[in-house]
Amino acid sequence: MDYDRLYDTVSGDVYRAELGFYDEYDLHREQYGNPNLQLLPENGYELYGQAVSGYIYK
Image (cartoon, rainbow, N blue to C red):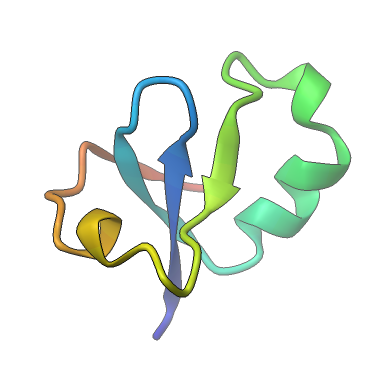
């Protein structure tokens, strides 16, 4: 795939982000308005089935 799927650990919203965004975000998450994003876990089947709430571009 050419994107990552992330989820907000507080709201549960799922986002689609360009590849590479999460690597930079994870290093500097305190600089972002939402520091609660994580990559979808491999066993997070319910999250994979959830509609995407938004898109994140670098």
